Length: 152
View 1 (cartoon, helix red, strand yellow):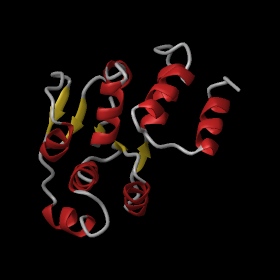
View 2 (tube, one colour):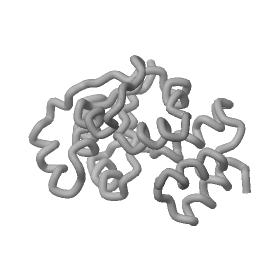
View 3 (cartoon, helix red, strand yellow):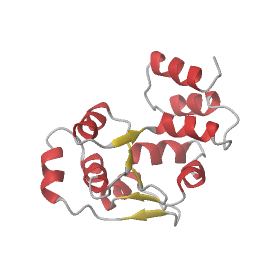
View 4 (cartoon, one colour):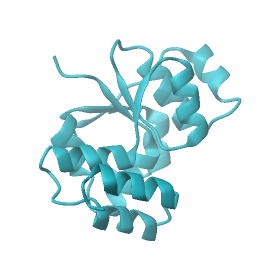
């Protein structure tokens, strides 16, 4: 059975802006997100990106204390599925997801998975493209990802 994968806006926006959004579909097939995330992305997205409302409104409200609405709804939606994976990049959002016991990855993790799956030859150019559009990543994280990809 395919795992449920839920994305926040940062991954969608980042991959869309560097022309690599299709990697999500190649890796995961259908990807879920919330209406609030779609509002943050602000453009039409492909049909394999399925929009679903998070039903745990109390959890969304609790999460909103420290993270934005899109992240809160993505995390809340992930709690509705056993064995879900949520794609988050924001440090506070990742910490909140971990406190709830969720499995997570980020945009760079998606690039790494795409390389391991054979959908990308290398991740360096995609990471550089993300940096050019303002996607923040520390030098330490860049080096770690390149090492994991066998590119350093």
